[in-house]
Image (cartoon, rainbow, N blue to C red; front, side):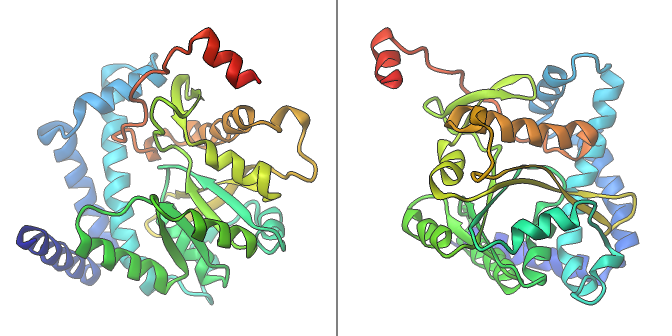
Length: 306
């Protein structure tokens, strides 16, 4: 308990310092820290190299190191921008900071009477996307795992909730999720979470990956459109592009998507579309690919087919 409290106080102290610094100074610090993490510390180096070379086998070692450095810069800047965003971006000036190439299409579904399943991944600055949605008067509910440090978990969730992004615990919130869906609200889900050997196995970026079946079922059983979204950083701090790479609406969904596996594959392909355009903004440090699919017996396959 004492150790977690000390960790919490230290992080709050760092957040205070970051908030006082100009964002341009934060950008310089992020570049230096990214270089250290790439060339000296080499934190999770093996995981990063394995992920990048598996998805992009044509990458040279120098290109892998450069992509790694850019990824760390992105992750550090993401944290810095989360601190600065509430002070800089408001409902009267957000268009000065945010580009919305799919504004008309996204607005149509964001204000729909039905619930919306917004799927994103560990790409870009998804925290800013949640902030912007709440800022514009459209609160969202995100299913996420609690942080191990309960003090930090309370602090982060209070921060998110103040601006309209509410967190639902990953475990034990089925009833609350049902209320959100029935109330026609926005349910946001990180779609690239590992679901274990019993998950729905599909191809993600050319590798087998396990996904939670519930993501597709929310749309298939709840008449809730699925929108695959992204919020990526532009070439300046605190400047973003928010868009979508696809929408699956149960009212006009093709027959090929009306089952769990094919819809799951569809939204993973849409996430991959955004990642391939800006690979340095994906969390290659994230352990997305873990166990391999469990081989099913003939009896199990027959039961599934039935």
